[in-house]
Image (tube, rainbow, N blue to C red):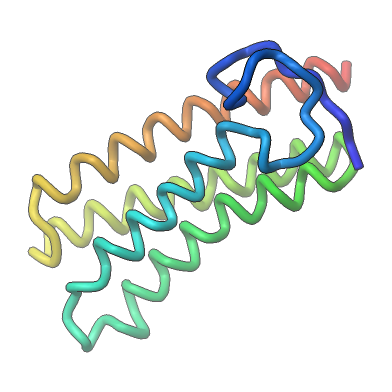
Length: 137
C-alpha cells in the first residue's frame, strides 16, 4: 500500500500527516457524500428510469469514490490512473445531473448543490493528481 504525505488541508480531514488509508483522504470523504446525495436525488426519478439514468448516475457516483480507494491501494502510477478515471466518472455525473434537470426529473434547486459538489470534488481530484504526478517525477 502506498503511503503518501499530503500537506494540503483541502485533501485531508485532519492536520497534515501521513495518509494511512483512503478513509483519511478528504477527497474520498467528499466523494462518499456525493454518492449519498446522488442516491437521494435519484430516488424520486420516474420508475421508467430505474435501469436507465438512475442506474448510470449511481454507478458513476460510486465509481468516483471506488477509484480513489482502489488507486490508493496500488502503485503510484496506478493511483494517478485511478484518479483520472474518477475525474471521468465525475464528468459523467455532471452531464447526467444536467440531463436530469433538462428532463425535469430534478429542479434547479436540487441540481445546483449536486453540481457544486461535483465542481469542488473536481478541483480536489485535479490537485491530488498534480501532487501524485509531482511525487512520481
